[in-house]
Length: 289
Image: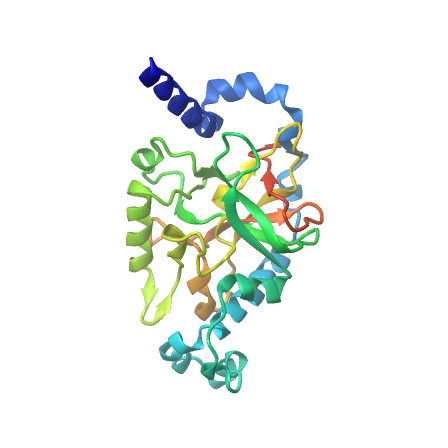
């Protein structure tokens, strides 16, 4: 009897994390939870923050992360034009110990996001503002993972995987940090490299405190009728002008290297001021009319 109860409990926990990808459950339950839906009148109105502002925020944080790691960036910096080297080289910084990425984030953006036990029962891990506060319209997290176009194979990676994010245009992001998903990401990340220039960050696969501290968005939980969403997902295609030396902090990589499409990222943007100690909640479903 105890074994049956344990199996039933394990199934219930698994079901709560996977049910949002089960179409019959979605059809039966979405209308019962109106506050969990985000509705926009047109695709052009889906973005809470302009792409230029998203790019500027990421460049600002990534620049400080690179400055904080100059001891390990010497080979890369030698290949940059002198004008760019000057941007990252601060007198005497090489003699100081590097700060933790979260500290860099706090000093740059004014807040820190970290993974912790969720305040929701059965929700598992959640994401919280642990220091400072995030003003309305801030990029508070990124959704890491492998990017799959509509015609690329993701079936085996998706089995028992609640971390597959679907963009409006059908592009998928596999944010799972375990099993086959982890192997695929590592393989693609190692493939996409230009000499000393790494084009992605894989540290989110192995630690709760990745090199890019924003790369925790896959653990943001869905809102409920009692807990309104305080962040929203926003798709962002990395522009061609994004500095090559800063791409090492992007937590996304394409499954297929030869695609001409820009790298798709998904960021989470704060819908209101979020204070220290608050958990982040998003809308898992956006309905575009």
